[in-house]
Length: 133
Image 1 (spheres, rainbow, N blue to C red):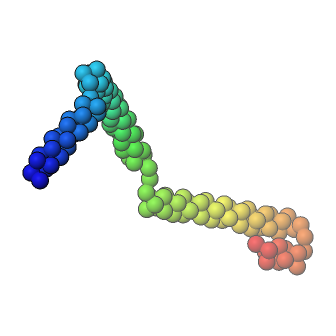
Image 2: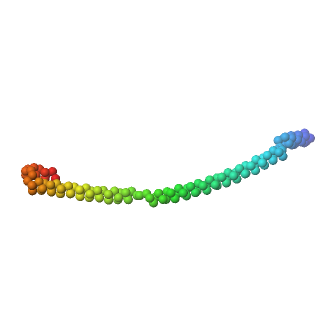
Image 3: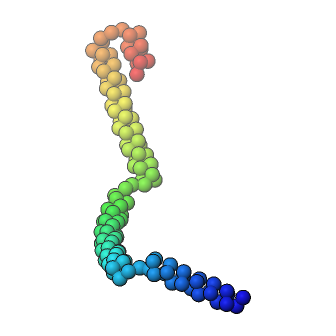
């Protein structure tokens, strides 16, 4: 029995050695793997350099963009500023309208007085004109 076990172990060993011999990488295959590995490392190094260069370019563009946005922020007005400015302009427009209306009223009163002095129109007509002012 021990003899059979020994023979079986030897046969298993021979089969394993044969399998390793048949499936083992050759020197050419190992050289090709090494070449691929080196090429991959070179490609990764170039890719890393390219990515780094792009990040530098992107950082510069962001810096320019930030500077541009900062400049825009200083030129933008706030809602409070616009509200105050519109209120000022509204008040100024109101004052101008009031001055114009006052001048027009004085003109009409002066015209009616002129018509009275020169006795143009009767009292009823002049009274009607005064009511229109």
